Image 1 (tube, rainbow over the protein chains, first blue to last red):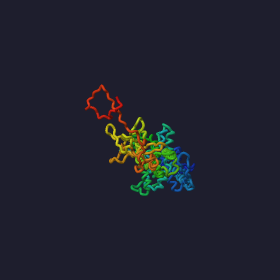
Image 2: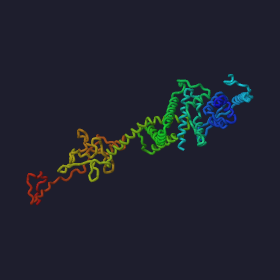
Image 3: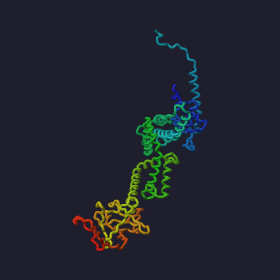
Image 4: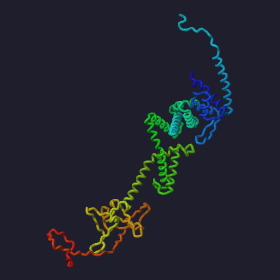
Amino acid sequence: MDTTQLLKGVLDMAVLAVIAEDDGYGYDIVRRLRAAGLDEVGDASVYGTLRRLYSAGALSSYVVPSDGGPHRKYYGMNPHGRAMLDEQRANWTHFAGTLTRLLEKPQPSVHLPTIGDNS
Amino acid sequence: MSDTATTTQSIRDFALAVRTALSDLPTDDIDELTDGLEADLTEQAADGEAVGSASPGFELGDPVAYAEELRGAAGLPVREANATARVPWLRRLRIRVGAGRAGATRRIRSSAAGGQILDFLLEFRPLWWVLRGWIVYAVAEVLVGGAISTVPTDPIRWLALTVFVVLSAQWGRGQWLPWRWLPGFRTVVSVCAVLVLPLVLFVTAHQASAQNSAYVDYSPYVTPGLVQSGQEVTNVFAYDADGQPLTDVQLFDQDGRALNVVNDPANTNYLPQLDAVGEQDMVVPSLLVPAGGGWNVFPLRLVSSGDIDYANDYLGQAHQADAAPAPFPYAQVQPLVRVPEVREPTSTPPATLQPEPTASAAPTAG
């Protein structure tokens, strides 16, 4: 299954979770997500998500001057972001549990008619 | 590595193309979305290189798709057609130019030969940086110095030129750009420099030729018009048979050409001549020749060093109005005496073939 589609729905949560560990700048967060196993995450998606979360007031940002390179815009969590992450985590846990249970339920061994059976 | 500069340029072009694709959004949104994009891409490129050949390598991909991904993830509206009115025109121009450049670069690099030619030309960028510094100096010279002189004439101007060239080179290398608006300003300067370049070259060529013609016209040491024993002749004084000075004598050479003391009589107005104490006087042509160019009417008149006008020309300018008759070297010379004819008794030349005798027989001869 194409995990890109799955990722779209949960990228906010993944980004929040990564930033909850430590503040970071754009590509730094992409790198951490990929290191965590989300290899297929697109950097543009992450940057867009960061921007949206920032607009929604879930993240704070500050600029860190770097010597030799351009300034870096760091994102960090704020209380609103933490609350959002907690809520999403609860939702996800509930949803994932439901889905897991659904998938792990022993399949009913009903006899499905196949073509040609009734002849 | 030489690749780094190329990568940096392609990242810059890519980022500009992304901004173009977002150009229908408000400026603030574009800034928010793409602020630090170059830095992020550069780091990503560095990561790709660090992994080495095992990695598929760093691919910038399609900037439009990238922009759509950014926009979608940020929850911003999809692009509307003709919705670019909110973007300031200057920014739009910059974005458009950048996108055009990115597109051109991509097209050129799509062929191996194109890429090689582009790389070859990129090697000449330092030359352009120097040229740009010089042009800015020349323009500053006009605006601040008030004089049109594209080549420095004194140490302070040389210093100014050096400063401009160093600044231009540093800008070219991406250094010394502490403020955000400076890269844009650099572009404006470059465009203006390209526009002014032909004018500056024209003025410089004109100055060089003026300097050269100045040497030809005024300097006696390059190609004197009339020479005696290797020394330049600047004036000629004629005396008649009685040893009295003559004025307004027209002289011609063996081919019937006017015996001028300058090479280009039609275009030469004065000829320098050092006087006894080393001051530079100017010899001027006679005004008695109707068509001008009276450089063979002797003695030529003289403008003394005190009357020479150095206001416009460091070589000085002499005006005919200041000219005075040149002083004769001698008030008079010895009168000519007729040389007695030497009779040769053995020869019997026929009388009719004899040229007009220059001297009659003297009684003392023979």
